[in-house]
Image (cartoon, rainbow, N blue to C red):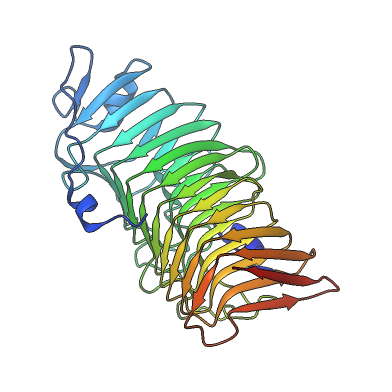
Length: 370
């Protein structure tokens, strides 16, 4: 029996940010020093500048659209003039990367790359059957990404479609063996075909904070996922509009026989999920495995459940849930689930504010404390 979290990982193979904050332009590119490289002054493409840069070098990219793939396998920083001015755009033909998949930017071989003040954008020109766009930014092979005041947009195929193993905006790590790490801050991630940010595999870590992550209006998507043992912090993000879309015949409210899409998904004990705003997702937050630090989240207009807790011990503190069929679902599918809800405020649900779901001889219990 396929469970939602399993389905999510297989499909990938893969603070409310106020209007004022988004109006603030990223810090302009730093003054260019004598050992910096400037695109297109010194090199016409970003890739040529990366190839020429010394390890630890800095690359400034002037305003413009750069239609190319970029592969980074050394420590380097790339700074644009703002996400509305500097764009790395998917080329018409995408070459496969070191993992056999395609991406617009690939960071690999233990490299540490810093990117800010720019947009990485699709769409790809392939289809589900041939030349599909795997991800916008790909981090693997022990590499690290620091993404700040940037954007990742339109990570879809042409036409946009529900393709398997396709179109994650930022993908970090992979199963069964590859890992990666990242810090993603103050970045706008929109219009992806599969998922917004995915951190995958034991040993992969990330800090994801103060970002806006918005799903595709016509495709089934997930927002931020830490799965297959990945751990880290998910704090202060606004995540919205991730849900099942037609046609998706396997979606529905039955946790044991159907699948759900969520704003935030995590299954790694030790992960922190705090102070996020979730709006208009099918499930606001879906957690599995227990021992996840969750609290202070503001969850509104979920089409089914505000928070789903599956297979383990959970303590949820001071979350606010408004709308949905249930505020909190406590699900026992492969292990007993015991949820303690402290100061969780639930209002305007069409069904029971707290609902348990049990299968296969396991028990689900919920303790509510003011």
